[in-house]
Image 1: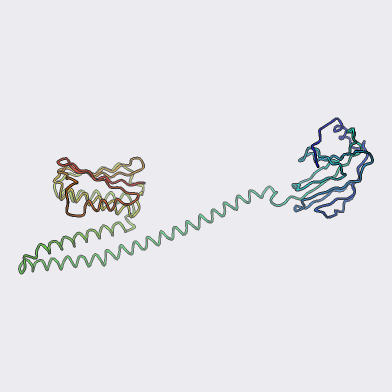
Image 2 (image 1 turned 90 degrees about the vertical axis):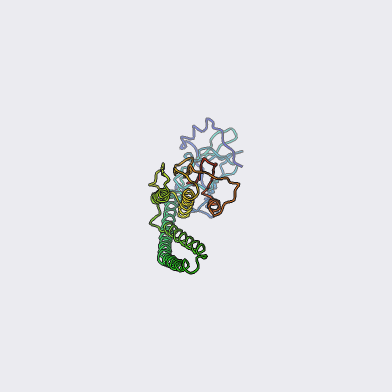
Length: 358
């Protein structure tokens, strides 16, 4: 049972230990094993050594207490009624152990000093924790590098696949569709002469073929990695709007209020935005009877808003319409990052709002 010693005047006398009798050491035990200790020598402990016991030869007298301390790191005094000193798990370093024996009145009877040296474990060295930090940073660095290389390879692989698909669609599917359009035109000329009643059907087939060709071209444009930029998307949108609406005598204004140097859209988003925009422009050209139309692109509250509006006749949502325009708007707005809202008033006009989270 160890108890903290209350300092007294006898502590001052300890500074001059040569004036007291010397306490002799009977034996030293390290981890339960006898250590070959010689008088006035240093007790050497290796890093794994945990338990140190110094047994003393008893000092003559009644009610003798033995006090010991290491001033540098373990400064308080401990005492024991038995002539022994116990320390466990000393940190690496050099120590100067002080031992004294007192009688019941607190008078110092005998003293001694023991030098102790314990080797530092490698985890107690000054370089250990910096090395751990460097090792962890190195692991993270290597992991980040490997991930970067893997991600780059996947992107290059995806780009190659996209190039291949775009090339195949353009060369093979596009060629076949153009051939179909030519054959339909030849067949149409014969039908005009032989069976004119089939002409509306042929016109419908021809229109569908042309629409399929245009849709295929838009898909090829979206897939092609060369068009992976916001700037090219809005250039294509502006050109399409001017081409279609100007041919119908509709004034068109395209206003861009965002930084187009930053690529903020994914391939799927670019495709959906363009097809929705294209559908809106075609609806204005075919059904609105408008004289003016506009498209405004701006950034608001973390969303890019694309507003396509006209001053045409508008329409009533309660009416039933032919075609797939509104259905396509609804279908493409099911994307988590894209929303489409259509509003219209009779004799006022129609507005299509595309909102994309960035």
